[in-house]
Amino acid sequence: MLSAFLLMFVVYLVRAVMLDWSTFSMTERAALLGVASVMAAVLHFHIHWVRAEFDRASGRIEITRRGLIYRKREVYSLKALESVRIDQSSDSDGDSHRVVLVFSDRMLAELDPAERDRLVSRHKQGFRQVPPNEVPLTLYFSGISSPQDAALALNRWIARPD
Image (cartoon, rainbow, N blue to C red):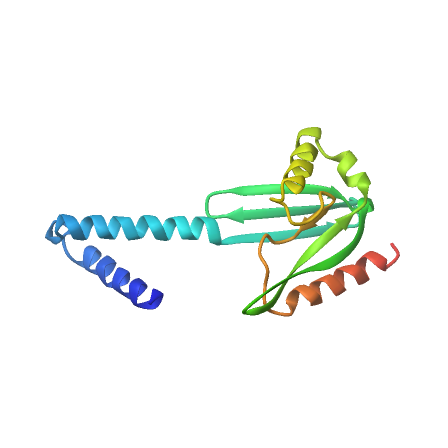
C-alpha cells in the first residue's frame, strides 16, 4: 500500500517537474502539496542519526543526535559511566533492542539542575522508560543483533585499563 502511494507521488512529482505546474487541477495541486507535507513530517520525526564519541584522553562521552532540521549535543563524563546494557522490548513481531549507557548517580549531580529535574520528572510520569541516570544511544529499538555487539564492544572498552 505504501509503495503504491509513494509510486503515485513520484509519478505526480515527475509530471510536475516535466510539465507546467498550471496543467494540474487545484485538487491535484493540493494533493501533491499535502503528500509532500506529510512526507516531510514523516522524515522529520523518523529519520535521525546518532553519533557517540568515547574519548579517554578528554574523559568525556559526546553524543550528537541529528535530524533533518535539528541537532542536539550531549556531553557526559567518562568517569561516571559504569556499564553499557541492552534494553529489550517485545511485541508480536518479536524482540527488539537498543544500547543504553548506565551512569553512576554522579552523572545526575553533574547535570544542569533544570535538565536533571526534567529527566527525573519525565521518569516519574512514565514518559521515560529508563531511569534518569541511563542514556539510550537511540530512541528506538532495533530487531537486528548490532545493539548487542555494540554493547559488548563498549563494555570491553570500558573494562580495558588506560
